[in-house]
Image (tube, rainbow, N blue to C red; front, side):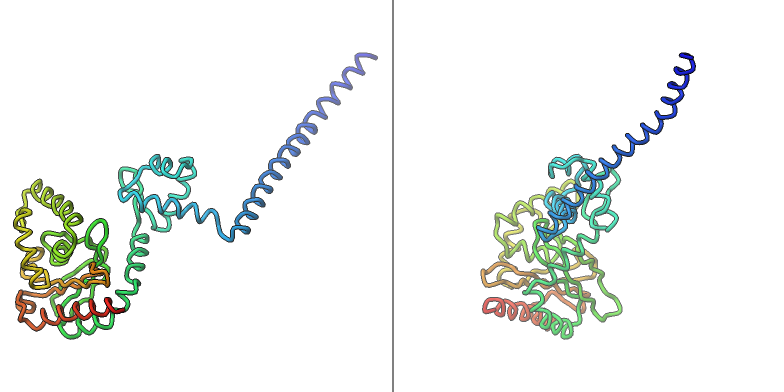
Length: 302
């Protein structure tokens, strides 16, 4: 009899054990779900109170870190910069790459993507000065029918923010977003000549060093030659190159100054040697120089 009771008790326990385990699992799962719901509700409440989307702000912080660093970054560097767990940074980096605001290069580092550059260029193009100058720039283009480069100064050097094609059968292709060299481009020379020495000289020294390592001759080849060229360009009010970047193509660049006497932007005209000779008496060169001077007067009194 006792044996039967023991068998019955063991059988009952074996039957109840899965039920008890399932109940315990459901209770634990329900508790976890409740915790997750509370966290989501709290986050939504915080975002609603703050009037923003926190996840978007975190993503933009990752983008800001890439912008501020100026060179590609490893995931670990991004994580340390943001004081954020690498796995979390990686999730946001993947989204930025998917949307083309960032890219991952061959060595695994993250850099700014094309969409980030387009966003930056769009902001620059919409600055009040360039927007206000558009009618006069368009009129200049109509008058001289040369390719026109509009550039702004950045910490990396002169950045092309606008390119207006000429109506000529043969034209020069300029890529918006290009950083122009200081030594052998009219745009670069204009900034180098008309900017303060403490800004221009370190950048010029870097270019001279690169040219030396590449064993490429360049003019001006040193600081003394640059100062001679600088004096000449200041007297002329323009900077020029003749076939330096592309054989048979001349470029003339004129700076536009703001009310503080600093370069606001530059306008460069590009054309063939016959169309755009390096001659201050040439009508196209005169028109470029006069337009830049008129825009300077406008900004000074704007």
